[in-house]
Amino acid sequence: QQQVKQSPQSLIVQKGGISIINCAYENTAFDYFPWYQQFPGKGPALLIAIRPDVSEKKEGRFTISFNKSAKQFSLHIMDSQPGDSATYFCAANDSSYKLIFGSGTRLLVRP
Amino acid sequence: EAQVTQNPRYLITVTGKKLTVTCSQNMNHEYMSWYRQDPGLGLRQIYYSMNVEVTDKGDVPEGYKVSRKEKRNFPLILESPSPNQTSLYFCASSLWKGGGKADTQYFGPGTRLTVL
Figure 1 (cartoon, rainbow over the protein chains, first blue to last red):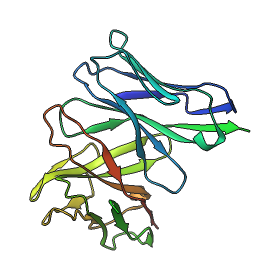
Figure 2: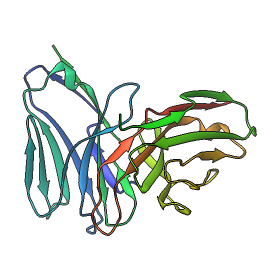
Figure 3: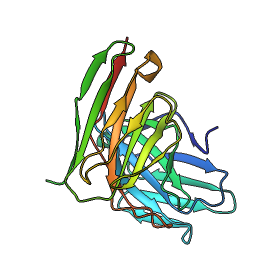
Figure 4: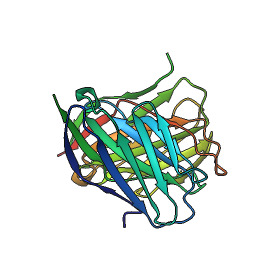
């Protein structure tokens, strides 16, 4: 049973385009939603995170949009660059010590 | 340099041969955790530790053991590995103290384990 559903599984975007990755959850107790970025051969690293008291958070070209009523959140990468090619994981936490990850999205940005 | 280190990075073993994957962090973090990463399943938590001598099960603890005798170290033990434990394993640490204030997790470089 996957508590955080992530889509798409893979994504190909042209350089300069917008990459959008979506996640949905069921547990209304989740109150922390981070996104992690993983390059080949490396461990995941925190990219950006949001708490449900705001609907959007932006850091540079990366934006999280959060829809509490729909229980969905998404990552938008503006002006996507080949260096953004990586696997992206959404995650959620419900104030316990557990962090639940989505299944991951492999992003390829073509030059 | 603040980091999480894991050893070994690659390991090929046979069914039933006990092994230990070490994890160490130099950030004085109280929270440490082990995950396994499998294609299409993302990262799944195996065990976590909130502090020295305090550990708890994650979502997929079967076949694994952990111990936390020192703050900086959190080894993962497979007492009788089986082929279904072939995976990419990550250790992580965090300042996270629970209670709704989840914090950034810092991941190690990973250990690729193959059990024949």
